[in-house]
Amino acid sequence: MKTPRHSLFAACAPGIEPLLEKELRALGLRSARAEAGGVSFTSDLRGIVRAHLGAGLAHSIRLRVARGHLMSFSELEAFAKTIDWALYLRSGESFDIRAFSRSSKLYHTGAIEARIALVASDRSGAKFERGAERTLYFRIVKNRATVAVDLSGAPLHQRGYRLETAKAPLREDLARALIVLSGWDCASHFVDPMMGAGTLPIEAALLSRRIAPGKNRNFAFTELPAFSEASSVLQEERERFISLELESSAPIFGSDRDRGAVTVARRNAKRAGLGAEAIQMEVAPLGEAPGLREPLPQRGLLAVNPPYGKRVGKKSALIPLYQALGERIRTLPPDFKVAMVAADARLPRLAGSGLEPALLTDHGGVKVRFFFRAEPEAQRER
Image (tube, rainbow, N blue to C red; front, side):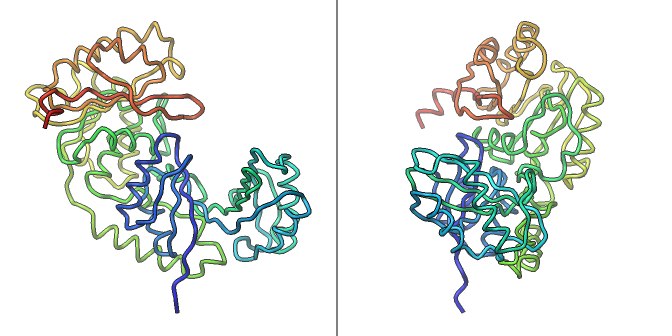
């Protein structure tokens, strides 16, 4: 019997699409193709499970269940009735619908959601409820419509370890994207001297030890009637990912001047399955950060998510902090990489350390940009 193939879409933060495509391809999903807002790919159930466990840059993964060309609400209702809703919704459970329309005859998203909800409820026995975790997506652009079902449940960046936060935490998927885009080799020195709740060093340790980002959480697709074998396949793939883990990692350092933040970071690391030896965490100001003490190795990565004004404090009060950070960066060896997140391009420039703007993305409604240290000329010429 031929294994069914499914059409899927992995959603991610803006600008992350090429990185996510590469990540999915590395998981064996060779059909992955980046597009606006995420990556499309086709896969069987095992590939769906693998993507959920191993994709650390995705926000959610959706199953595309139907497509059509729609010009009226009567066509929408007929289209909705062609979908076997009992495969994706259980009788009695709650579901939500989110509709998007652009350049189409069907433009009233509220009316679209109401029509689909009526048909889906009638055919499955489920009930429409705003805010329900089970979510359906309807998207129509130039009269071409797609219906998709969320397979992930809680957003995939919620790995299950960051149950406590410090000030202005960087989301897990963006932390991983910053590290990946920096070009860090996952084996050399890593340091975050302003780690807050520890997201950057924890993500670095997960990457270095090849620990699957979704290892410690559950997913909504295991409850879909369409995937009756999902739980057993998920267990098999979990065990396969665990067999690929490394016992040791790169030398990883995290510090913060806030003792409470360091306490939180240590607890988060423990929940991520990382022992105390995986990350050296200390209470220390920038000038005494453990990972920046001399002598430093020639290669490594300084990754940092400093306050950037829109989230914590006023910009003028942050200038001395960025200047101090810039002074420290200038003392690093030429091949030591630097990666920074900032919402205001003027703040990294104050560091005066050759940081160049790169990817622009969105973090909780705030536009932020990644900055990286320019490569040495000799390295560029190779």
